Structures are given as structure tokens and as C-alpha cells.
Image (tube, rainbow, N blue to C red; front, side, top):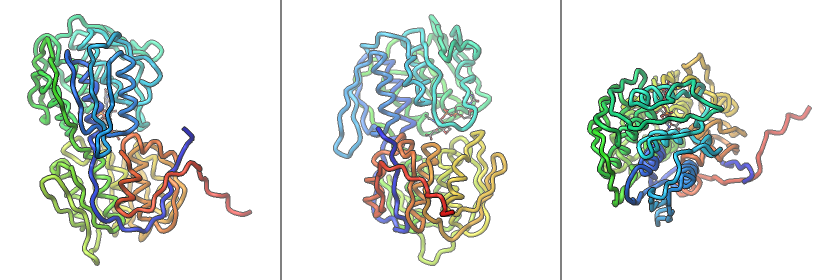
Length: 440
Ligand code: EPZ
């Protein structure tokens, strides 16, 4: 597929209603978990995004049978039968396309007692080690779990049997928490994870596993206990939770365009870190059972704020770029402290091209409010940065091209249709635009 961009004519207020899709970071863990069951299952509310298609492809190369059905509202329903899996190796190039492929380590260890995986990919925020995953698998009896045991980028682990263990994470890690939960589900004995991550997608994977017959307690707290079981019967349907990060992105898009949007199919408590900040800045954020309305009083003053990204229930790092766009259009100085990733400000130069006034010092960005963004040609450096640039372009005066737009489609289902339905002037174009050099 040739490269494509999103062409956006900014300045239109977003108004109306938008439905949030299933959570990318939940469904990627749930798909790996589905590979462990001893029956069949149906997954509903699966977002139709490229990372999901990559994960489906990976599961199919293992031999799993997955039929994809288009649901009326545009999401996918998957009919999964993992009993046809015929290998413990996931070493093809596709593995390096996404980070979540590493969940197959935990799932295959649990299912086959052996796993061989090419090192995963994912957004480039600097170092993305998997030492916590390997340390935990080693504690559970897996051989080959030493970081130096990487033969040309392939990790091979063996554990027969996998045993329950006490696992303490000195860094809160979403991926390591999910991976150990998967491996522990069918291990012999009990595993207790301390200092576990508490994100909504962790709870969704645990709920999925429990509805399969697993025995997991405490997901969503910092201590999770898993009693291993020999069989996971499956034979049920499960619906993926709404995407917290997609919802936050639309809340911010509504705010920066001065619009009035109601976001449906959300779990308001998951949005609390962002909702609280937006209210503090001067936006109206009204919650109902499963929807949130974002708007602002006509002459409301929007003031800057300070944010520090933290593991849930702190402010999510995956909304950091979008929140910086919100800060750019607030009065006065704001500060964004990126506390999870080593280097997650690579998109800032793209915002500077749109007229932003930001200075970055290591993990801190100091943002001076401006009146307006100006349209420009910018590049998505990763999926959330790309979404942030779309928000800035929607608010900007003039036309913008967000190139490398396929990165955005990794995590945002039908983004052009959804934004158009809110009044945005956005098109997908195959022409990759670069600003003409100034006339000599
Ligand atoms: C997940 O990545 C998400 N990806 C990321 O979202 C998200 O930014 C991140 O969690 C934090 O919330 C998926 O769920 C597919 P971590 P993950 O392990 O699991 C360090 C998006 O935009 N660490 O919680 O890779 C790590 O370097 C993506 O949807 C170790 O040191 O993140 C980081 O500093 C981008 N050793 C911190 O922990 C390890 O073995 C948190 O990472 C593992 C992690």
C-alpha cells in the first residue's frame, strides 16, 4: 500500500456524537489469552485496526483458526478455535511489527510448555526492554529466560512444568503484568504479582481469562493472585471494553476545536485523570453512565496546567501528546512531565512547524500558550503522536497534511469517518506532501 496522509482543513468546530471502539491494548492481550483455551470462543467489539489484524495474522501462523466477521457498527467479531495450534514458534517478521506480540511468550509457555519468539517491535520511545517479563518467567521455572539468551533476536523459553511463583515488579509494567498473568493461568500452583499495573486493559484480560475458567483475583489492584488450572474450557462470548485512549483523544479534539461533542460507549471512571485536568483548565466535562460531553462556555478562559504521566490511575502516557496540544491552546505556561517513557517528545518539532511554543528539557516539556496553530505538513512519529497532530490540524488555521498516517490507523478505528461525522474537513490522500522549498 503506497504511503498516505490525512489532509485536514482546520478551523471547524467538532459537534455531535461519536461512538468509541473496543480497546486496542485490551484486545491484543485478550487475543493472546484466547490462544490458551481448550475450547472455542467469540470476541465481540474488536476494533478494526491494523494492530489487531497483525495479531490475528500471528495467531493464525501458529495454526489457530480465526474467522473474522464485520459487525453492523463497524467493529469486528472474531470466532476463535486455538485447538488447531501446531507450533510453539512465533519467529516470522510480522512479530516485529507490534509490541504486543510478546504476549505470545506467556500464552505459548502456558499452552505448550515452550515458546520461541522474535523480539517484539512497537513505537520507538527509546529503550523498551523485556527484562521484567524474562525475570518473572525465570522465577516460574522457565529455562532460557536470561536477557543474554537472544540468538539473533529470537527468545526461546522452556518450562515443563511452569510453576507458580511470587513475582515483584520494581517498575510498574503493563506488558509484564499481562504476560505473567497469562503464563500463571495454567502454571502448577499459585502466582502472586506484587506492584502490578492496574490499567483498565489489565482488568479486561483478567475478566476474559476468568470467564474462560481461570482463577485470577485482584486485577486492577497492585497485587494480583492467580491459581493455576489444568484446563480452560472456553466455549463462550466476550466483549472488549471501550478504548480509554481513543475516548480521551476525541475529548481533546472536541476541546481544541471549541466544539461540543458527546462521546458514547465510554467508562467515565477510566477517563477521570483527563476529565479532572480538562475541568481544571476551564472546559465543561459532563459525565453520564456511559458517555461524556465536552464543550466550553463561549467566553471561558482556558488556563494552562501541569501534568505528570503515571501508571493508572495516574494520567496515561498514551494521552501525553494529545494533552500537549491542549496545553498549546491554553493561556499561559503549562508543563508536561513524561514519567513513563525515556523519549516520548519526538513529535514536538512537528508541532513547532504548526506554530507551537514548546521547550523540551529531557523528560519535561514547557509549553507557552499560543492563539492558533497554523496549517503545515507534519509527520506522525508514532500512533499517539499522529493522533495529537490530527487534533492540532483540526484546530489550525489553514490546511495541514499529516503524513505517515498508517501509524494512526494502528490504533484508531475509522478515524476519518468518525471525525467527518463531527464536522471535520478531513480526507485521506495518497499524495505524500512535503512543503515546497521557499523560492530562492
Ligand atoms: C503498554 O506498553 C502499551 N502498549 C503502551 O501503549 C503504553 O504506553 C504502556 O503500556 C504504558 O501504559 C500495549 O499495551 C500494546 P510497560 P508496554 O511495560 O507494556 C519499562 C499505545 O500507544 N519496562 O508498561 O510496553 C518500560 O521501558 C502504546 O497504545 C522495563 O524496564 O509498557 C517503560 O519505561 C504505546 N522492562 C515502563 O517499564 C520491562 O521488561 C512501562 O512500560 C518492561 C517494561
